Length: 238
Image 1 (cartoon, rainbow, N blue to C red):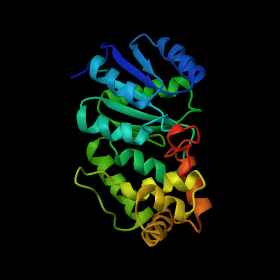
Image 2 (image 1 turned 120 degrees about the horizontal axis):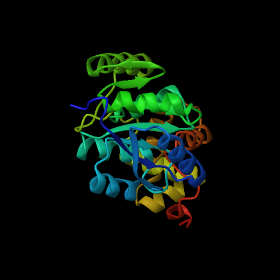
Image 3 (image 1 turned 30 degrees about the vertical axis):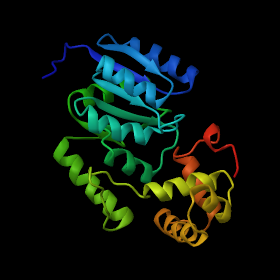
Image 4 (image 1 turned 180 degrees about the vertical axis):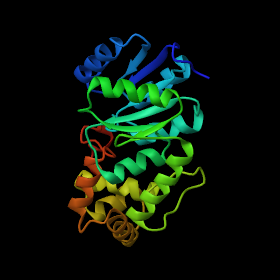
């Protein structure tokens, strides 16, 4: 059990050098916090978590390669003793639910004041959960999350690992191609499936995201950091 005098080790995973450096300097002003490492992408970040085993990880959503929610699920699966805080510029209700369902201990906007973030780091290191200035224990967080998800989406489905995921892996794959401007025929050729199958998946995607068209679906994916426009893996069209 951590005592008030124990140092809290922190790892930062964020791909913006200026923000990452500023955050590191701000946190180092607090005597009982120690920045043990930083990373600018999810894969390297996971490797550093394995090596350094920090108490708390500060995790951006919009990362190159693996996005922050994918990293979050991996952290929850492999390092359940490591608390992590989603720290992002994309603050909307549904993304908060995705993040907390993925196992985050807290969700904060990047405009948060340093003093408040330091308090949240201390809280999650002590086993609490923090969302919208509300500090909760595990039981309270579980109840809060269930109520919020059901109010937002109705009865929801969880996968075998207990993660609430709005889109299936195939739907997410199709949405990534939509973001890059591909039409159904191009997506079908790229994935080796029929155009009708793509159309069926698109209908499901629009319904799950509660949007009217492909453009809105693409905007949603970009806003939540699910897809990045600088991801080179999508640059070649079929």
